[in-house]
Length: 620
Image 1: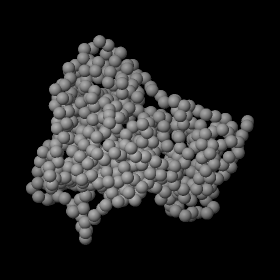
Image 2: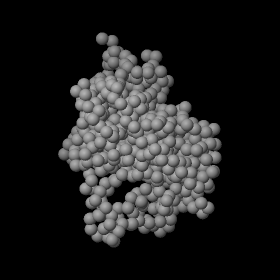
Image 3: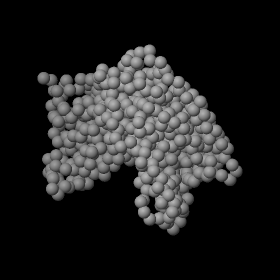
Image 4: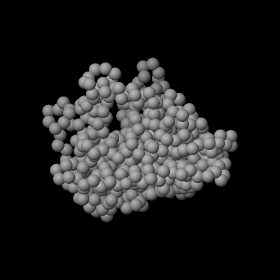
């Protein structure tokens, strides 16, 4: 057997560089790195060698520098999502705080079922220098390190304590990341002394490999059961989730919906599987849902979830669907397919819809409520076009309307947490693939790093990043990375002087209390006056403040000609007035209300809470 003598880190990098997807691209085209002790001498040296290729003829394996471990990983996650899980990035950190900074990002990828390879440095396997700098010591278990924090938030965890363990650990990692059912983050906790150890590796280990994504067919019995339910239904409705996009089943979904006259509603992850202009797209489902979508779901006697994990925002905390309605869940993972007592159809979304189309044969199409859809779209158009009166600050709908009017049909809107995701889900009218939302984990600080990842994945499309001032303050430093790499995208920074979204939720669930969310309601000596334009400019971005909606439109158009990120700051109101709310039909969201204490308004809020809770479908 022919062998090659390499360090464990060199072997890892070489192996990763020859793992391919079905399009012949590297599944992991590069790695994000912040070096420190624990990865600089081992993996860092290997990556330095790989930046120019290697003697075996492999192309360079690039290393990208970020500003924070969490946001580097957010960029990687956004890239994977924008590539529909057909590619992913790796991220490496030092031990200690560098590694634990990655835990939040790992949880985000886990919730959203997205591939991510994390390679944090770890303690010495030989334990000779214990305790090493930044080492967390477990007083009762010598095998534990800080990296054990990853165990509950990744799909696969492995601690590399000997070089030859990579022979099994690396293929297992790629198996998880390319498995559509179990897809998620992987953590290879790489002991720092092992990274630098040499080993004689079988040459065959570095043979290029193509990873094929399974598209499993459903069980014929499940197909027939679901087809029978559809035939018997009078008012079916579909909820399309992210699994439709990851399956590449957008066209199949549209054809199925039109063939049988079934309205399609969307989750945050599933939005833009169908273009908004598609006649079967009734818009957002659930708590942040449209009037047309929620009316269709509330009236449905059969709800068909496709590629959705049926989160509480989608189901209205299990109170949106009629008590007598039947629920079907088409999902590639049995765990998700069985939620809420659903009749399961475990399969790839595209394969399942194809088999159902055949099984239903010439079943006549239902008549969709086109008038309801038209009325909702008219309400969206009207709400987004309301002029801002002199002296008033715009609301989110007016900002979204202005941005939509100033962008081309191929624009991708991106956001993550706060009020804006609900507004975008309701109001943004994308072409297919024109929407990117991190709402599974609803993680503040994702937005700017995510925009960088999306633009890297889709350089041909305009990327518009919506971010509130609160989320911007949490994580903005990857703006500098985008400037360094000349990756252009547009940031629309809405400044409502605090955490406006959670302030509204607090008011609704506490009888009107406002505390510790907006700057004006904090126990501080002075209100901060933050110059976001100056801050963004200091990171190298082009930055400007829009004094009006018209100026916002003009700046959106001007940003397209730049090779660096553009940040447009616009002040908005944190407290929309009467008639300024969203034109939706928001379903109930279960947020616990105090049972006693407080003013009469709190007692009224609790009474409403109890009334809504009584509508919940108590099926697990």
